[in-house]
Image (cartoon, rainbow, N blue to C red; front, side, top):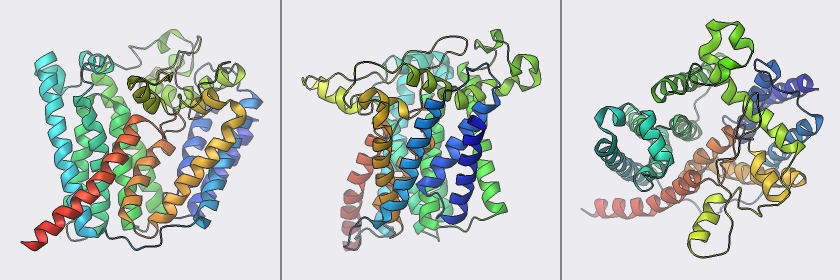
Length: 412
């Protein structure tokens, strides 16, 4: 059954890339789920056979999300013309980039004082552990600004044809700044946000061979970042427990360098199967998906029970603690709520994408950030994660500020 589902997902993905506009939410969803399910089906690690019920809910979530994105353009979109022009977009991008670089500098300065220059500049495990323990709870928030800056610089590169290379370089600087915070996924998703923002704005003609080359290059770059930073922070095949489990990688040593990458891409599917077979009895009432919001309400004194974003691991032989984007929904409302919630998310993403077709910079920037949640949905649910909400809020604040600065500059 799994092989049939993979074939259907791959076929649907091919149709989506053929018929829909570039980086449409349906394309992104179907592509990443086709890849994750296909890799899991290879069983290069000793995963248990996935249950038919789990495949049913994955398919139901996908049908709901993709179907909703196709219906969403029928919803009303803002009628008034946007007052945000190319000049205001560039002002906003410049403001966000400056703020991101200043924030990055403050984070690095704190890290140098705490762990020394070498550990700070080469993303050591010591620094990574300190970040996870909350020692940099304030300065590490520069990541929100960096994600916002990358997206807005991508929009600026799309609208400013004369200075396109400069803005692409600026987007690259915003992406590169996230390296110091030690998170491999953050570096990748910031790059995705910048790329999607540029592609939606500039609308380059990527068909056939060019599309394959672009997609292949993006995938290769992501894997390279994963492997290189894994070496720096000590997350490698040799340092993991994979070598103690008989698998394709123990029998083929030449492929061991890809073992951890394969596990990260496929293990959440197996973990989801564990969750579906034995879902939690107590519902978290929205505090799994909206953990960041519930945490803020809890600190404000309200009676909320935020669910920790780091979940318990599944059992041996391949323990894992991310359960795809379906995880939060199952914990909040149960498996039967999966199609409903993902249908609503599909409507949101599809509506935003429809608004981007009208050339509205705010919608393009928001969609670029949300697209990272679609692409990472095979690993975790980040649609309402702190970095997503934070980046969107910062972008929405930056645009009015940019309009004021642009107006003041024009009066001089």
